[in-house]
Image: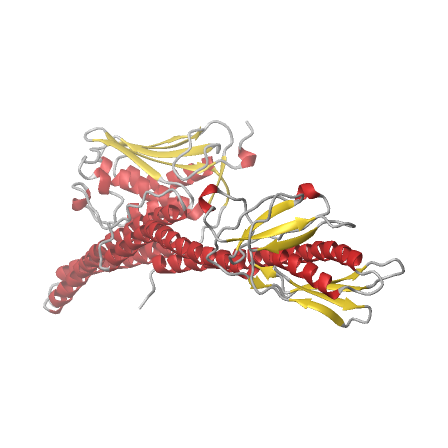
Length: 537
């Protein structure tokens, strides 16, 4: 079972979204954790420095433990931390743990009925003010009142500075969460005139770092769910866009595999898949053309085999008949001579047919190499006329030559081009009739023929007669193998001559053309490229 590309795409989107959320969550958690750790460290150091200065005023010759405890209780209530005073040998003298934690915030009228503890910052006779507390509101006096409700701490640190302007009236608000305890601790010396009197340690300060980090993690959890939902939606959309044309290509390929070579993939996307579909359709078109060509070749081969069988069967049947007649003509020398002459003619026809078939098959297979060399055009024409002049005179046919201007040379296989000219002239002499004229000529031409470069100078050859011409219905088929028109049906021949002519010229990179009009004759033409040395006038 194959896994759809849509689900692979959705899985990759979800995995990528979760990976990004996880990396961002870890980085943000680490940054926030480090930030709060530094903030807590700074808050501890600031609080410890302030309390140490206050404690140094209460530590004269001997430490006043009761007053120091009151100081630590006051600061501990506000700083929400454990405060410990140590002597110079690091032995604890006073240790205050906050039993209750408080949260200070700006007061509001709707909190007037809340239960309050009143913390009074009283002015000492010497030194900075000190925080005191009372369950009842004291009378009017100098100092600043701080209203703090009995409630869990939520956030922030309260620092008591020497400047009275830094203290503000505040009231507490309830909290639904409880802070954790910071693992950090700070120890600072209590300054004295001759060195440290002792040490102040602040630890176990209230910390909201765990709650904040937990909130961040929870936010990233919900963000990951949203990201997964978005990734699934995007994956479904993109997967549908990707898989739909691919499914169409698959369906088209299945139709072609089933034999429907006309099937095409109607994909109009302008992307890589669209380009793939276009190439697929081009391949399908070429494949269809190839199969059609193969089917046409197969049909042509069948016709060819049938024609060959017929052409071979005719002389063989005639030979068999003449042999049977010879057996019964022992007493008739004239009949025997006639039968022997007919048998020799049929053997000659059979030999000619076999040679032509062999030559044509070698030309089709490319096994008959062309021995190209520069040849004089006038010599080719003159030799052709010399070979056919006796036959033309015997049939009372005029044979004319038209030579080109200048000394022209073409690059060709002389024997094969002479074979082409012989075939064309032989057909013309055969069909022109008594008193007709056959013209063999050549001339320089700058009009390229099919299969030759446009800038190549040409020499055009032609064989023309003024005979009965070729019927229009026969004209498209005269170069087919074993095809015989109305005029050829009454003459001897293998029916392969013009097919061999076309194959030889195609091997030279040329082609043959024909123009004919019934009652006025025919004209066969072909061209060969002019040699370089033959271009100079």
